[in-house]
Length: 153
Image (tube, rainbow, N blue to C red; front, side, top):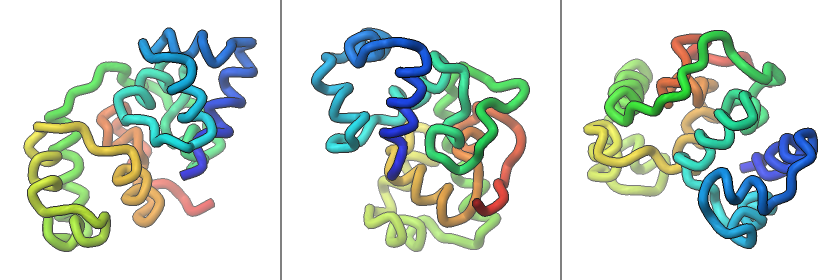
């Protein structure tokens, strides 16, 4: 997904060790090192915490934009907003839950659970949707109201 080197860059800019960042998200340093090397996928909730900690957008971490931060970033996560925005995105793009699930190699019930706000969208699904449709991860996660769509890099 190509976020590991950006996390490493942000950490090094702040003169922090992996163990320091691991403490921020309350995990072991060994686990965080797996996130930076992308041997393990970072959960969305940790990604949001780190974006807030470094004061950057998730789009910046994903390398969708060179803009480090959007004005008026909301640091509070509202899982219901995430679900509503995912549903709105899906309908705007004329995708059924089944079609979106197929694209993400998951089940319709997983998509339905995301849209109902039962679970936070998984990082690989968030990344795939945003990359393919050029939609802002920060917008989908309710961290910003704009930009909604990003220009292709």
